[in-house]
Length: 99
Image (cartoon, rainbow, N blue to C red):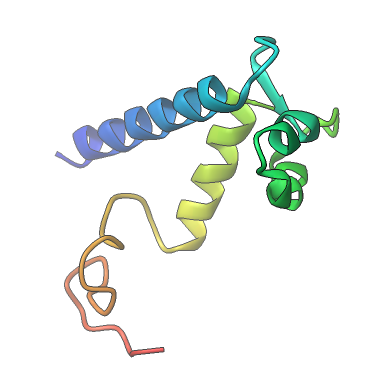
């Protein structure tokens, strides 16, 4: 069951990366760079783009986006969608303190 849930989470991450690239990649090269973000009025995300750019080539690939998203999910304490409901409810249903 856990393996199935992890596989589903991986598939969701992959689809999200694909959609992001499709939406923002204006020149069709399979990457998103700062110019493409700026052209769409999303230049404010340049810092995030630099954080995701693992090879420092100035562009983010689908794999780099996916890896960055996975790191963010791991920092939140695991994978899955437990953050979507009541924000005080933790991964195993434990109450989390209010911020």
